[in-house]
Amino acid sequence: MQKHRQKRGSSVVSFSGGKDSCLALYKAIQKGYRIKYLFNTISDDFERVRFHGVRKETVAMQAQALGIRLVQQETSGIDYENEYVAALHNVRGNVDALVFGDIHVRNCYAFAKRVSKKVGLSLSEPLWGLRTENLFREFINA
Image (cartoon, rainbow, N blue to C red; front, side, top):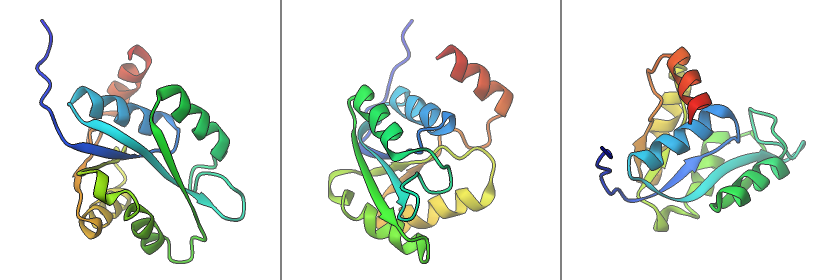
């Protein structure tokens, strides 16, 4: 029996290219979110995904393989939250929700809540509070 998927609005996924953001993307799609963009910030000094170190070209290849438009914004990191919010305003008119892949780090969850509120998007955290062992198994089996 197929699960009923509720249709949801268009979304942007905060996407580092790592396993957590990949699984959050997968779960958001399962929940009926229509993913319009993958979004991340790039350090202006190293040209890598900020805080994760993944090469920006690697994430671009992932987005291309997924067939989802990638929005990458270079940031200095000096006023990171405001830079992040300003960059999200560029896609704001085309989406209703912001998806993050946070699991248990409260500061990251608080950041997601603040930026989604500042931009006026609903927030989805499909991995929040779930056991990492279960997420690992789900990721491997997806």
